[in-house]
Image (tube, rainbow, N blue to C red):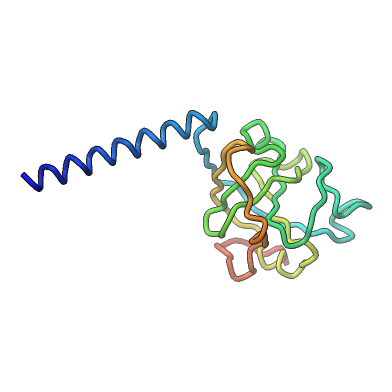
Length: 160
Protein backbone atom coordinates (compact mmCIF):
# COMPACT_ATOMS: atom_id res chain seq x y z
CA UNK A 1 0.00 0.00 0.00
CA UNK A 2 2.87 2.43 0.72
CA UNK A 3 3.90 2.82 -2.96
CA UNK A 4 0.28 3.57 -3.92
CA UNK A 5 -0.03 6.17 -1.15
CA UNK A 6 3.25 7.81 -2.23
CA UNK A 7 2.09 7.88 -5.86
CA UNK A 8 -1.23 9.41 -4.81
CA UNK A 9 0.57 12.12 -2.80
CA UNK A 10 2.84 12.86 -5.77
CA UNK A 11 -0.11 13.06 -8.17
CA UNK A 12 -1.99 15.37 -5.78
CA UNK A 13 1.04 17.67 -5.46
CA UNK A 14 1.53 17.69 -9.24
CA UNK A 15 -2.11 18.63 -9.88
CA UNK A 16 -1.97 21.36 -7.22
CA UNK A 17 1.19 22.82 -8.76
CA UNK A 18 -0.37 22.73 -12.24
CA UNK A 19 -3.43 24.57 -10.97
CA UNK A 20 -1.22 27.23 -9.33
CA UNK A 21 0.68 27.81 -12.57
CA UNK A 22 -2.57 28.07 -14.53
CA UNK A 23 -4.04 30.49 -11.95
CA UNK A 24 -0.89 32.65 -12.03
CA UNK A 25 -1.16 32.85 -15.81
CA UNK A 26 -4.79 33.99 -15.57
CA UNK A 27 -3.99 36.57 -12.85
CA UNK A 28 -1.19 38.08 -14.92
CA UNK A 29 -3.54 38.56 -17.84
CA UNK A 30 -1.28 36.83 -20.31
CA UNK A 31 0.90 33.75 -20.46
CA UNK A 32 4.62 34.01 -20.94
CA UNK A 33 5.48 34.77 -24.55
CA UNK A 34 8.71 34.09 -26.39
CA UNK A 35 10.23 35.01 -29.72
CA UNK A 36 13.54 34.83 -31.55
CA UNK A 37 14.89 38.30 -32.34
CA UNK A 38 18.07 39.97 -33.50
CA UNK A 39 19.92 41.55 -30.59
CA UNK A 40 22.35 44.39 -31.18
CA UNK A 41 23.93 46.83 -28.73
CA UNK A 42 23.93 50.56 -28.12
CA UNK A 43 25.66 53.16 -25.97
CA UNK A 44 25.09 56.62 -24.54
CA UNK A 45 27.86 58.26 -26.53
CA UNK A 46 28.01 61.00 -29.19
CA UNK A 47 27.44 59.61 -32.65
CA UNK A 48 24.95 56.97 -31.47
CA UNK A 49 22.35 59.29 -29.97
CA UNK A 50 21.01 62.81 -30.15
CA UNK A 51 22.00 65.70 -27.88
CA UNK A 52 20.51 63.92 -24.83
CA UNK A 53 22.37 60.59 -24.78
CA UNK A 54 20.91 59.37 -21.45
CA UNK A 55 17.31 60.29 -22.34
CA UNK A 56 15.25 57.36 -23.66
CA UNK A 57 12.34 57.61 -26.10
CA UNK A 58 9.67 57.23 -23.37
CA UNK A 59 11.35 59.87 -21.21
CA UNK A 60 13.23 57.48 -18.91
CA UNK A 61 16.78 58.28 -17.88
CA UNK A 62 19.29 55.62 -18.88
CA UNK A 63 21.79 54.72 -16.18
CA UNK A 64 24.97 52.87 -17.20
CA UNK A 65 25.16 49.50 -15.49
CA UNK A 66 21.42 48.80 -15.57
CA UNK A 67 19.95 45.92 -17.56
CA UNK A 68 18.00 47.88 -20.16
CA UNK A 69 16.88 47.18 -23.71
CA UNK A 70 15.33 49.13 -26.53
CA UNK A 71 12.76 47.34 -28.69
CA UNK A 72 11.72 47.74 -32.30
CA UNK A 73 8.29 49.32 -32.58
CA UNK A 74 6.63 46.17 -33.98
CA UNK A 75 7.26 44.44 -30.62
CA UNK A 76 5.43 47.06 -28.56
CA UNK A 77 1.88 45.81 -29.39
CA UNK A 78 3.02 42.30 -28.40
CA UNK A 79 3.46 43.41 -24.79
CA UNK A 80 7.00 44.73 -24.98
CA UNK A 81 6.14 48.33 -24.15
CA UNK A 82 7.67 50.63 -21.59
CA UNK A 83 8.67 48.87 -18.36
CA UNK A 84 8.10 45.34 -19.69
CA UNK A 85 10.46 42.80 -18.14
CA UNK A 86 12.36 40.53 -20.50
CA UNK A 87 14.52 37.45 -20.01
CA UNK A 88 17.11 36.79 -22.70
CA UNK A 89 18.16 33.16 -23.10
CA UNK A 90 21.84 32.74 -22.30
CA UNK A 91 22.07 35.91 -20.19
CA UNK A 92 21.47 36.20 -16.45
CA UNK A 93 18.63 38.21 -14.91
CA UNK A 94 15.88 40.35 -16.37
CA UNK A 95 16.06 43.37 -18.64
CA UNK A 96 13.70 46.32 -18.54
CA UNK A 97 12.30 47.87 -21.72
CA UNK A 98 13.08 51.58 -21.37
CA UNK A 99 13.68 52.66 -24.95
CA UNK A 100 12.34 52.11 -28.45
CA UNK A 101 14.17 51.93 -31.73
CA UNK A 102 13.58 53.77 -34.98
CA UNK A 103 10.75 52.65 -37.25
CA UNK A 104 12.99 50.95 -39.81
CA UNK A 105 13.79 48.01 -37.51
CA UNK A 106 11.63 44.94 -36.87
CA UNK A 107 11.96 41.91 -34.56
CA UNK A 108 14.98 43.53 -32.95
CA UNK A 109 16.18 44.50 -29.50
CA UNK A 110 19.14 46.68 -28.54
CA UNK A 111 21.00 45.87 -25.31
CA UNK A 112 22.18 48.96 -23.45
CA UNK A 113 25.91 48.99 -22.65
CA UNK A 114 26.13 52.47 -21.11
CA UNK A 115 29.40 54.05 -22.21
CA UNK A 116 31.25 50.76 -22.82
CA UNK A 117 31.61 50.94 -26.61
CA UNK A 118 34.12 48.08 -26.75
CA UNK A 119 31.75 45.66 -24.94
CA UNK A 120 28.94 46.70 -27.29
CA UNK A 121 31.17 45.97 -30.30
CA UNK A 122 32.14 42.61 -28.83
CA UNK A 123 28.44 41.76 -28.41
CA UNK A 124 27.90 42.55 -32.09
CA UNK A 125 24.71 41.20 -33.62
CA UNK A 126 23.24 37.94 -32.37
CA UNK A 127 20.06 35.93 -32.66
CA UNK A 128 18.53 35.37 -29.21
CA UNK A 129 15.26 34.09 -27.77
CA UNK A 130 13.47 36.48 -25.44
CA UNK A 131 10.69 35.73 -22.92
CA UNK A 132 8.30 38.27 -21.39
CA UNK A 133 5.08 38.96 -19.52
CA UNK A 134 3.19 42.26 -19.27
CA UNK A 135 5.07 45.07 -17.51
CA UNK A 136 3.42 44.57 -14.10
CA UNK A 137 4.11 40.83 -13.92
CA UNK A 138 7.70 40.83 -12.69
CA UNK A 139 10.22 42.94 -10.84
CA UNK A 140 13.72 44.01 -11.77
CA UNK A 141 16.53 43.11 -9.45
CA UNK A 142 18.13 46.54 -9.41
CA UNK A 143 21.07 45.42 -7.29
CA UNK A 144 22.21 43.08 -10.05
CA UNK A 145 21.26 45.41 -12.93
CA UNK A 146 24.33 44.99 -15.10
CA UNK A 147 24.71 44.56 -18.84
CA UNK A 148 26.08 41.23 -20.06
CA UNK A 149 29.81 40.78 -20.07
CA UNK A 150 31.48 40.56 -23.42
CA UNK A 151 32.29 36.93 -22.59
CA UNK A 152 28.54 36.11 -22.51
CA UNK A 153 28.33 36.00 -26.31
CA UNK A 154 26.21 33.44 -28.04
CA UNK A 155 27.26 33.60 -31.66
CA UNK A 156 26.94 36.18 -34.34
CA UNK A 157 28.54 38.88 -36.35
CA UNK A 158 30.70 41.56 -34.89
CA UNK A 159 29.95 45.18 -35.63
CA UNK A 160 33.66 45.84 -36.19
